[in-house]
Length: 373
Image (cartoon, rainbow, N blue to C red; front, side, top):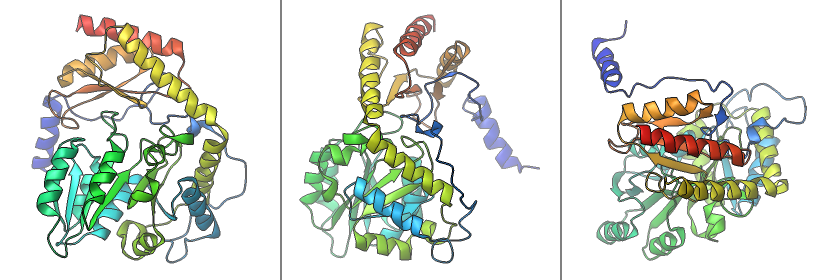
């Protein structure tokens, strides 16, 4: 029997219209997944592989294949070293607490992902958020708090924000961080990999600042269509994390079939530049039709695969999503408290495999639905 106070919390979600449910996509047109390039549907070359890694990498789970694929990832991203983690969540909750102690300070964009926030909570460092993509506000905080002796400061942001689809001015951010001693930039590239930059290598590659960032987190469950993550940085950082990142040390390593899926996805990024360019075309086409259907004021401006239509109130946005799903379009409602009240939204994820006809149908139906609502 669930304790009463926990039942009450569930009841609050139910009556506010924000109770989360697991749903299955049953043949709908995919405008919901993070599988931006459709790589999740690729078949691996049939090879014999073990079902499990048998243990953590520090005991029995490490293999030559782990080493080879970390070198492959590092080379692709023009990084000195890469360290594999079992997911982007594991990477963030391992990286942030490992780097910081009570003397340190974390400054983070107010819209960073929950995994980053959880990593911050697990750390012993002081933390302050800065206004979303507001470098002037970040500069004020750096000027005020970064000069204390023995203090290391970590600035954390994302390449593409998962709920808004927008990006920071990364070049300006890098230049700002470089003005201060003992300040280090951490960039989560989760939603940029496969979408932004040459061959989808990410925003740091696009802006030519790969060598100016202390640590980059790349995750494979989105644009690469598989599973796992890696932290990119110096050889010293890799060695440090092997010794101090708890989510790396105390977990079973990724198995061989997962490693081969990651390797295959990176090979496809190199071979299938058409997939990335097709996605760029689809994003531009979508934005063109947003204007043509009179929806510009509803949508946040985004040059990424994540497009956001603001429909305040949980019940209203849920109704809009239900209408679209009944007509065959898999578009999901994002409810408060996941986003702030009044910021409830439809989150449309675009893919290289979406067709012009599907986008036309979706936006025409959405325009009609919003008028009726």
